[in-house]
Length: 236
Image (tube, rainbow, N blue to C red; front, side, top):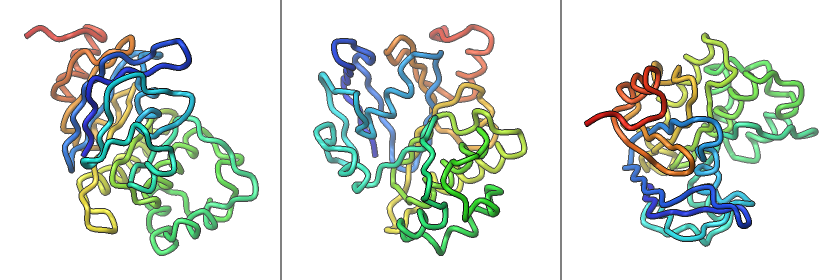
């Protein structure tokens, strides 16, 4: 589904990711772990094609297609979607009208109810939403977009414990399941708290520190190591 090969990324003259190699098979959910400022969000933004991140070297291959030269719209049309950590507010664009633009009105009521957002359908997107409500809407937005590769930037951050369960349920429902075209979906999740690991089936975790991918392994074992030893490479 996603193959990142020897990827180096910069903003201007500042290199922020170095020699990243990551393999995400079809139908799997992987987790990115690392301290603040380590490059996790930058990696997701680079996969999505957001400015000002520039690929200096290496490749990003999605479903067999190199995408590092494609723009944001082209990547979205291929089937890549991102739930942002800090999305903008959109005055005048209601949740319901946004779903209509996506052709996802039929799924809106059911998916909104699953994330306890039924009362938000006629409100402007993210306008007056709490931090946790914004995160839940970002997950709902991604479900409605129906991408084949789902990128989640800290989906449980700021979300109360009850709704973390709902967020995990939503991620579990779509990752590994087919999209509307019948193609199996994959996911990549950034987490700081690790709470989401109790509510999803993660296949693999990766530690990123200082812009480099240090280690990959079992998600629960790796998170347990981080809780006691910090963001270090576990002993063999």
